[in-house]
Length: 270
Image 1 (cartoon, rainbow, N blue to C red):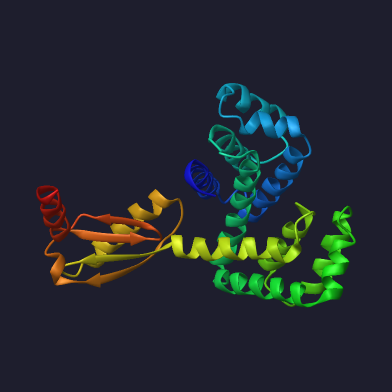
Image 2 (cartoon, rainbow, N blue to C red):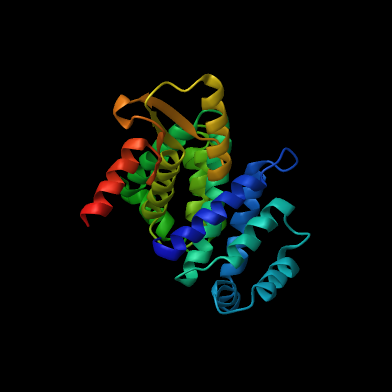
């Protein structure tokens, strides 16, 4: 996704991260979101309505509440409402946004167990395995209209051999968009996991070392801003003179004195 859809995706991911609680496990919310994607996708009229930026937000929210209220957790409902409020450049981006929110919650659970990177690697490995094994590819292709059978193949192939989050994500990969090739779906999730890892990692550069209290406070503020715990590395670079330069994923925040002087010079010379 790019442009407006990419921004909408980040909004949905933040809502998903904020919606988790001790009362509703993240994996349960993820399962509800995966099922919601299938329900919405079953009706072209519903997909068009919820993804149409020209339709009234209150109308779309009412449809979501009537369809899913009482059937999913409040946390999952909030994610669905956020997705309906967002603007998507293509209809299918709405479905992808909800699905990726579920994927992010499964990864969050794995991250809590310290296995998120393992899950990412396993998704890449399983994608290669299916692609390099004609019998597996044929088995999935021959069961395009039989989701339980495709999930059964996945669970027999991976059960007890990989992380449980990998099994969960692989099962989702084969059960939605059956017309898509399984390796492509698995790589889509693996690449998302990689992007999430990068998005949750950052570098903070300062002229002098920040105190542990300052580091803790900054980490807390930025984690809240990005909707999930960040892993920040702190570097010292006297050339910045003062202030902070923060890089998180593709985002750059340059509030250093050096940066301000450079910007001033560029404006003067322009």
